[in-house]
Amino acid sequence: MAQHTSVFPVLIDSRPEYLKPSESASLLQMPLGDGSILTHIASRLSACVPRSPVVVRGFHAHAAYDNALRASGVVKEPSFHESAFAHSLSRYEPSDWILFIDPRCFPLSGFDAEPLLYGLDDTPRLARHLIAMAPTSAGTSERVELDAESRVRCVQRYYEAVTWTVAYGVSCSLVPVSALLMSPRLPFGDLIELRRALVSTALPSRDTTIDGGIVDLNLAQSLLILNERSIADRPDDRARAPRTVIAPGARLVGKVVLHEGAQVGEQATIIGPAVIGANASIGRGAVVAQCVVAPGIEIADGVVARHRVVVESRPAPPAPTPPTAPAFDTGHITIRPEVTTQRIYPSVKRFFETIFAVVALILLSPLMAVIAVLIKLDSEGPVLYGDPREAKGGRLFHCYKFRTMKVGAHAAQRELAAANQVDGPQFKMQSDPRVTRVGKWLRKTNLDELPQLFNVALGHMSLVGPRPSPFRENQTCVPWRDARLSVRPGITGLWQVCRHDRELGDFHQWIYYDIQYIRHQSLLVDLKILLATLWTGGGRTHVPLSWIVSSARNEYI
Image (tube, rainbow, N blue to C red; front, side):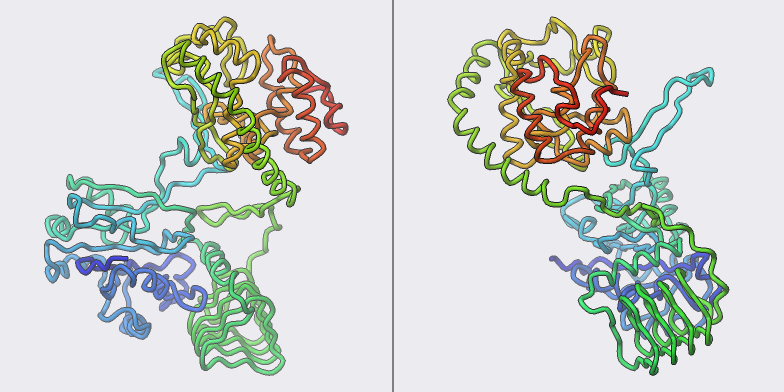
């Protein structure tokens, strides 16, 4: 990894509301695993930015604050208040860069400035920001759109990673010193405001989104979760720094990290995940359950502290703990326990399907070659058509089929929208003018789907599963989308062999049969669907649902 000697890191320190009861605690000083937030960021930066960081704070501090920063071995000089930082810019060269880092927007994968530093000397001097996208409830957000007369025109749904484009926070900003010198009155204590102010100065900028989730350390719960994740993978349950003291009769249960100088009194109990800061002391008979204790804090004898960030020597009684929910909010990400009803079968299924797909491609290669020749003779355009579809988890892949339509058919679909003969998001019409002569035969025999065996071999698809659909179809119903994207899509599926009343539109059947498959998927169900696919000629007729899933209802809702 390249060393960028012209880049100078600046760490922004703050005191969120949950730290304000203490006059000395700050976010950079708070424990994180067996170190602190300050040492974590410094260790991640050291590989690419060799300079010692400078700290800019948004609060007034005494000399003890700077002494504590220097004691970490990371910071070499006194901190600056954000209002005074502009005066220090004169010591930098105009060709230098300032890398601002705000730990309040904390990436779960850790701070990585390399995306901002890549190609630094080969591109124009513009501001670069590492941003986090705003979260949505259940991965989607709905907005009501009004017309000029304030009447509801439609309700538009936006999905994360597909159509949601709202930025929430800025984790890092890389800014040319020359731009800062020309605009000395800038809000250096808030990267969101700094990004906005730099845009107003006509400085070009580029945003890079953070890979993975983030936590908002303005929230105490987020700091608890961040520490829990930090110590979750430790091989030992107990980590003790030098000069720690554990009195006789004290109990440490689960993963507990004790920083240097921490003391645990007699009969005290610490229940992990918990992190006890440097020189903190836990009194006799006290109970500390799943807490982060700030450095130097004294927890009195017999005090009970649970599920909180402790920044006072005599913590107030804890608030009632809400019932455990299937999902808990981290402030900016929602982490859900992974629920898997089939732990072994999906892996076994993928293994055997991959072998089957490879063998089938070899055996069917002469037939596929003949089809390819017929397509080329019939109409201009490529033999294969690869349409972006959503796989398991919403990942995009190209679903391959033999081309059955004329080139430009997708663009022409909007002009034919009024002739759509089915409900829901899909499109279908009799005598579709876009379909070629060979395409009609391929569709009638379902031979157009043979190239999907390549997708099965690559792991994008399964032989049996929900129909692979593009995002424009999946966005219609959120629970349906979440369910069908929990498994790999299939060449055939329950909907294809059980659907009926097609001329009346069957979108509700589509939803119902997809969800029934997710609930009841098994080796036996997959084998029955494969047999039903052969029996119905690829879905030209239908079979009762009870033939495949005996416990499910036969009617759809």
